[in-house]
Length: 135
Length: 134
Image 1 (tube, each protein chain N blue to C red):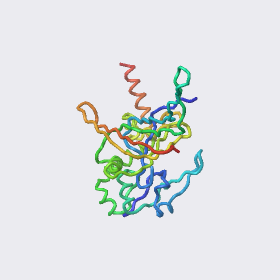
Image 2 (image 1 turned 45 degrees about the vertical axis):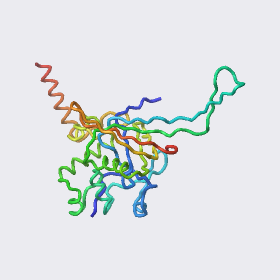
Image 3 (image 1 turned 60 degrees about the horizontal axis):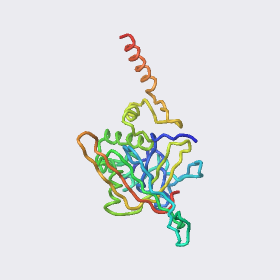
Image 4 (image 1 turned 90 degrees about the horizontal axis):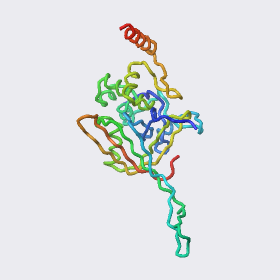
């Protein structure tokens, strides 16, 4: 049973098994190197299952997919939900914008980071405002 | 000093050795951190009573409110710490430019659930912490 991590996960190095410790990589942060499980790395067994069930990973084989007990749509929904939780996107309206690809999260000043559909959304919004002004 | 917004803050628990975000978070409260004191008033002292430090400090208690989904694996992992008590490191990541993350050694996990007609089902996740945060 195998799964691939969909994003970098910060590790609690003190809670790692020997096997997990061998998979750690390190990111530079302002406080020095931080241990992570890197995006794309492969996990197996019970860890694969729990990572998929939390939305942190995607199944790589049928056994893992079946063990998760979710449809592909449910899994995609959960993965997006998890990504939003890590980015701190918890506001109901912002979650809708995120799911629609209008925002990717918040920048340092907590303004929206535009997503692939940002321009189309802004254009549609401007069009509605123009119509409202005419009426 | 910058004003840091609450929006964007995340609260994470350890699941299979990785910090895992609690979904649908509404608020996080860290309270109770305090340098401990004792009453050092003596019979020959001045009118106003005195206090001094014991040299110890109280560790924080954390509570977080979130919308509750009993089928969510992270919520289930939190509840598993009640069924089978165990230490678990939790982490709060603030929204400053760093961003700053603070890790607490969590013990004594708890959960309160609230179901009312005019709101989503919510849970208040609580944990005591032990030792100094890092």
